[in-house]
Image (tube, rainbow, N blue to C red; front, top):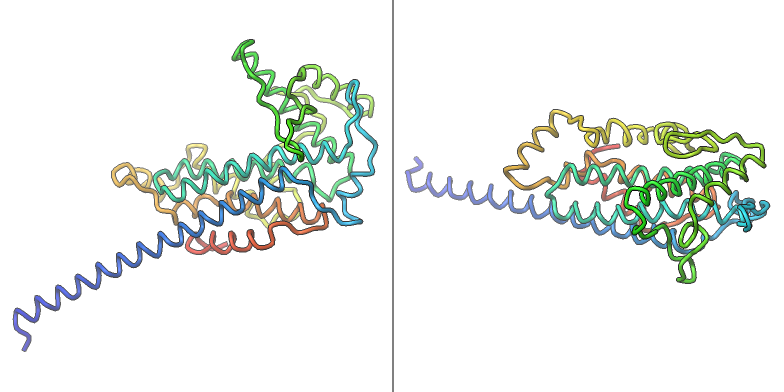
Length: 320
């Protein structure tokens, strides 16, 4: 027979074992979280290098063919077509890098589910724009139409911002070029309205129809919805990452996430595994961009960093 003392000891042992398992599970979850956040930081660093450094290109790659294209005549200056494509892609590559770092911070903090989901959606969007202008399945001219359309949108956004802020606004539309100097060819110390006019004139001289959009003129129609369904190297999750997977960014909350959002107000936490589950754009965007970049340049980038990131993202974050 087991006396009362033995029962109490058994209860204590069971309770201690359960506490030990909970502590071990929490520790392992934190280790997975920290490993994923470190891998995200690595991808961000890799994207920064891809945004600032020249790309290695294969001899017969589409990127090398773009280098042979005639210069684009914009007003009183000529700009190589390959440079335009590279720049407009790099603007979004660097945006994705910045947002990836923010995503890593939110993963480690585990305090904001909606913040992480919104940043993941931004990562996906930036990667999609970066991918669109180097799509190797279309011609150099088609890539150039996309790049100039994106530049028109960027320049028009700068004009709108300056109009809203007034004459005291500072033009921050520049990046650092490969030599570490300010690149003055794409907006800094230039008149964006004149640059817009120069692009429109160039397009019309080429016989490309220019449509006046609600926010900016367009040489070719572009949208995230269309691109997520039509770009090369897509595997089907891209549309999910932009719509269903990121619908919370539109204020449409699934039942389980609504419960967690409510509960998190009391707990003050948003577990990393839940962030991963609803942040597929943070994985789908880099995957699509790197796959397309490899086909465009004929060279694979981030060979070590990306497989590690992908493995850790799906370790505890759900299944593909």
